[in-house]
Image (cartoon, rainbow, N blue to C red):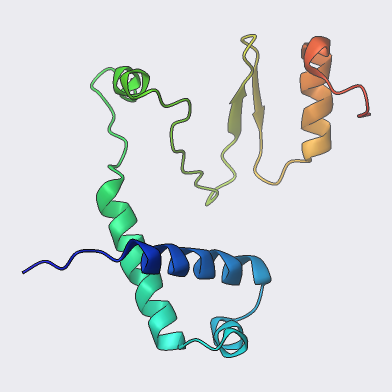
Length: 130
């Protein structure tokens, strides 16, 4: 028999997990300070991660390489989840809305990339930068 989910508990633990991540503290220290069980914390973290995986389907690649763009459009999604594998020194490809393609290596300088993009499309640059 399946239990009904307690939405308020789930919300509470999601917030706690986010706070711990932002705090920079170890789970043990965070839980001690918050007066919660580290065992429960880990259980909820594992359970919520599994629930999220079940409710979020993995992006599929169609035969022509198109990532189900039609489904995303129908669902009204503006963004597609992206995994960035920085395991190699393979370049990251940035496609500017105007059509420029810039390839940078992992570990690039973000300020330099902003300058390059601003040079390519001055209308999109922030006047306070540079």
